[in-house]
Amino acid sequence: MRNIFLFIRRYFNFLFFLALQVLALSFLFRYNRYHEAAFMSVASEITGSVNTRYNTVEYYFKLKKANESLVQENVHLRELLRSNYQGADTTRQLVVDSIRVDSLVLDQKYFYRDAKVVGSFVTTQTNFFTLHRGLNQGVNVDMGVIGPRGVVGRIVNVSSNFSTVMTMLSRQFKVDAKLKTSGDRGTISWDGISPQFVQMRNIPKNVKINKGDSVITSELSSIFPANILVGTVDTVVNDPSTNFLTLRLRSATNFSTVQHVYIVQNKQLEEQRMLEANTRKTNE
Image (cartoon, rainbow, N blue to C red; front, side, top):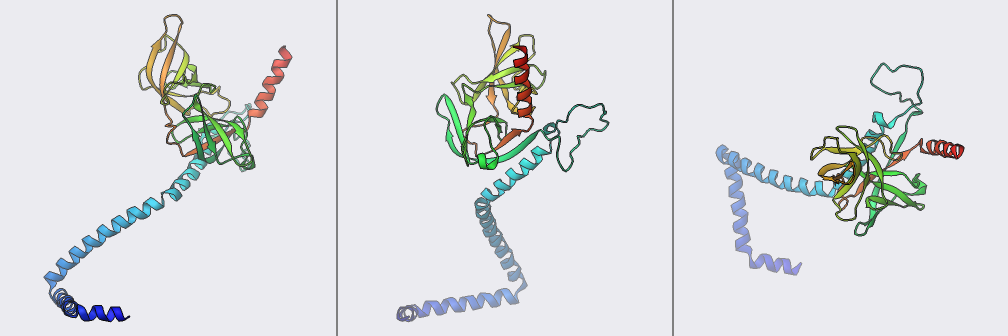
């Protein structure tokens, strides 16, 4: 307190001058319309500038919450896609461009769970992500994993609350895909060279292919829904010793920036695999 009084005593003249100056300006702006308008204009501009910067900072700190909200919304929207429902064939004829979705979602084939990437190992020949979702959240081995832009990989190991994903950038990863334009199917794999490119093999040489053509998952994939983007054609490699082309695709997913993914559960997969296994046993 003593220091405050000493400060006021030392700078009394200057502080008194400032007080009078503020009072004079107050009279000027209050009783002169021109100066009042000019002051309000400048004050509004300054206030607007400050509020803009404040909103920018506030928006930055709320990005995490906004991103999580968007992820939840995307999960809901993906589950509403027509391709996620596959009912058994019947003698009834569908006469509307829609599919039956009742309160029990009996026909729902694919179920989505959002997950956060908490570990990334993308510097080896077998690349993995770790997700903060596990058995306790309904995750199991051989579930597909996709990102906002396209295919990411598949679940290969699960603990109580975590799971590991073999990404598309792994030599052991394979997925059936097709050209969006022609529908010709091939197999996606990685050659272990560049993390930006994967290969699509077994495309007949008579197929017309252009740079930039999209490659999407096919209906034969058991863990991925059809029509999920894999990548776009970058280079067509013609091998004279075979009747097939090899396509070099630019991956739709940037594996170095993935933060949130969607785990895809094929609810009809177990039934399909059991039937196929029994069929193989019968034909042995």
